[in-house]
Structure formats: structure tokens, C-alpha cells
Image (cartoon, rainbow, N blue to C red):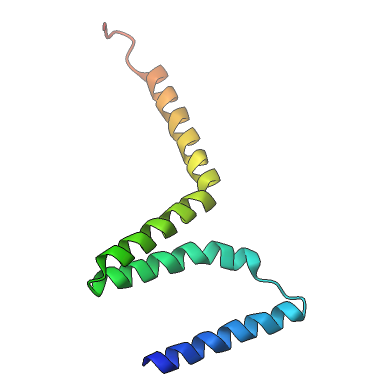
Length: 98
């Protein structure tokens, strides 16, 4: 796909989203979740095409956005890990002397 075709596809997608918004169909939550993945993907493509600075910046921005979106899930995993560690301390052999 050359540059003109890619730009054409992008314009059709943006126009289609604008028409759907006009009709009352909103995809804000879906695009808000997909945008970090898109940025990370563009960053990786940039990194592969020897554009290290741009690729790194896009990847870091996408990662930070994704971390913000998945913050609650990360906290849940941390809480489960703390519970497992606490239970493991209770179940240790009590004959050990420290």
C-alpha cells in the first residue's frame, strides 16, 4: 500500500466515524482503549524502520497510556500477590528459627 492509498483509507475511516457520530453512534470508549495499542504498534514500526527516537517516544507514550487504562487491573494483581505472599508466610514451617 503506497502513501496515497493509506491516506485514502485513513480519510474514509475518519469520515465514517464522523458520520456515525452524527447519527448518534459513539465509539469513544473503544477508541480510548485501542489508541495506546495503536501508538505502541506505530512505535514498533518506527523502531524497525530505523526511526529510533520517534519509535521510542511513541512506544513510551502508548505504554504510559495503557498503564493508565489498566491501572485497576494492575492493582488487582498486586493485591492478589500480596494475599498469596501473606498466606505463604502463614503456611511456612514453624520449626525454623530466624
